[in-house]
Image (cartoon, rainbow, N blue to C red; front, side, top):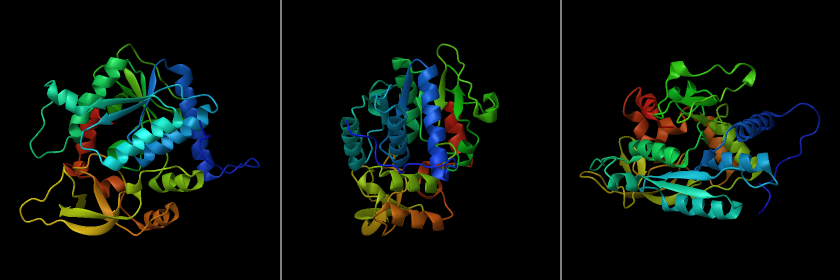
Length: 309
């Protein structure tokens, strides 16, 4: 197993901004490993989960990860991301668990809407996996800057035995002290990247040489313009009446279900070039490229109350 990437040695007593964020995340990861019995790290193959995995490897190096990875697979993921997921698990020696939305569709636990995205169906699959494996802490890569409902989130987010999130039931985290107390059947969602921004994530990717799927960098792709977004023309997204696919040079700011994740026109092929683009934008990656966040003003919060991340 190779060391988890390069990093600049910190000298002196004053930490840089990125070094302070890294130290905070490492502390949270170690705190959970020390106080919970069965933690798991959600790993989608996206940039935030890639950074989170990199931080986890640094936190416990040279020991192996003390918890497995879990991917909730909608069945509509990008092929490049699935290949990266499997390659990363093999390279790092991590144990990868895959919970499939298709299994819940086949079992009748959820019903797929014709022509709709499977993204909302992930909640049932996630909660099933948590229950089956009896996970009591679930790491996620969500950040407060992504969306206003996530801005309300604590680092330790308490979930009841139904996996539900209630903002008023969250616990104070004064002086970065975390309360992981829970009863059997309840669990805690843990967000070590809460205080990071998209720009922080990319600067860390650049400095620590974190590997990402190729989708995050500019490439030629057939796309379809729909509802003000560019969706990748795939076997999951096809032309509707009045639409026409065309080629464009694009990259993805976030990756998820291919049916609701848009891309942006870009020529950025390196982390440094991506950083320059992000520094000039006023839209978060979810606000710009995730169709499922546009369902209503409270769409994300409503899903989180049901158990979504």
